[in-house]
Image 1 (cartoon, rainbow, N blue to C red):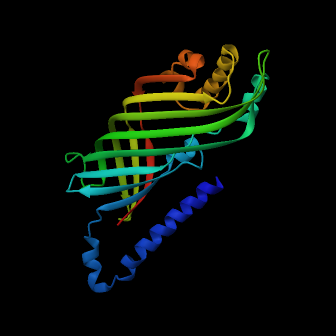
Image 2 (tube, one colour):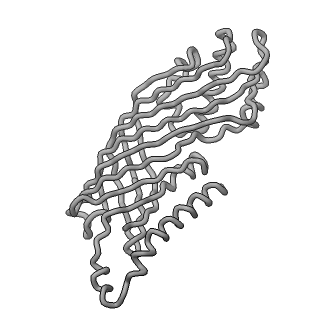
Length: 261
């Protein structure tokens, strides 16, 4: 949580430094002009991902207004899987134990093209209700060390886990504008079609039973941490080979905090 607070503070510091020249030049003769100034750019920070996936998930975005009722936005940043609890995993199955420590990396990239509804909204973009087609890509990768104590194998095994998700869909949202420069963007619902690709490589050769037991342990841990995981991943296919691919329902929802300029 400390890293999240530090990153958020750094974000607001950059915002304040960027805004300072604009406010410093203000004088009484230009106040009336500035009241009508149009801010077409918004930089923002994703508040939802750190809450769900942990403070290491840091995603920033940019929205550009195009005309009175449309805009384009892009988001990019670090994506991470939720932390696996060593205590919960190790207490349930003594033959498969997760060691402390892991290495991981991930990325999130998403784009959308927004249409702010003319008949519903009193103000022009980027304020009010909008609908938007979107594309989202998530890549997660994690390396863990497991200790196996089965009849066929005793020792440490390193697994390299990879999950790729491509999602295309349509979203409904609402963006608030406060004090002209602060933006709160809520993507309320974003159904779509998603392609999931899951793969786990094992560093050493295991017999089929030991491998299936290890894959089941990983699968159960992910199902407890990732919302909707068990509905889209074929766990039987994954437990046999450490691989699974499927196309299924996807979704998107999030909250952004932004600064307009």
